[in-house]
Length: 387
Image 1 (cartoon, one colour):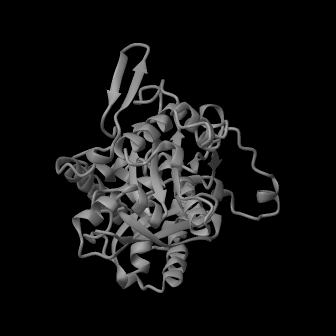
Image 2: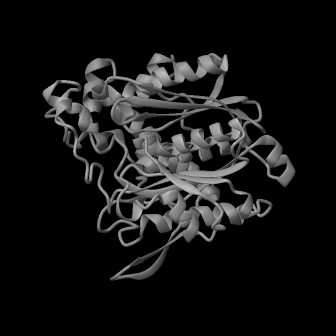
């Protein structure tokens, strides 16, 4: 059962970003403490595990961050924790892993989430890819550069033009602006204290990345950094961001015992591998497998939360399953093109947004959270609405 989820506002990475001088582990601490504050019926000593994902497990994102953040957050020393990595799907995998432990009977309650401080730790920091990948042609050279994999996806799906991708990106920004105006995003944001040497202390209360008022005309003029005369730009891709997410996952009987109020039930999940050079197609086979495991069809899914690593990746998914580019049940609040994509943290952002949409839509029974994953994977979780 997905009981509750929160996240910090997402910041832009870099020396002028919200969290330029804030530690990654402190962002996780803020999330854990907020989950405990919002759920006073959950005794901290009843938490059986803390699973926190990070793609770049180094520095303030290292030291087995699930355990170190739990200690820093003031949880009892009896609460264990660990770190997990599945690149972009880290937090999603943290949730499915502890959920599997709950189903097995090893846990009753767990906290799962993710963090990425891409300003302090750029994607690929400290990585040493084995030369066999290229020397033995195990993958195409473009597989190690995510923007190039998105260009490859445009090649595979020629019907997905740059114009379509830009139009989708502008729509994501529009949806995010409306969601903020309607107060849909703020309830699940935990304000985070920030400090810079020149400005002193401050408080991060909203996402830094969205660009309200973005137009297709403005996006059309952006550079294509991954290929001359290409189709992938900074405007139709997710940003480079910092942020943390977390959620409480519990067994049904434990939730009832403690008086917790779950929002969603995990029905099935699946991960799938694809050619790394077109990693953006990953959500297609993972969703097909998750549907098969659940005994469902795509027509049974009433709400979709798809991580917008690149517009082309979302559009490939929509085309495959026969959904319109502007389907009103897809990313209703906007997606990562607007909010940003702090890699390992994003999976739980999808879940918190789906849970809030479920509360507004008691007529919808099933929803999906899905995302593409670096090195050629996809991940999908199917949820049942408890509202």
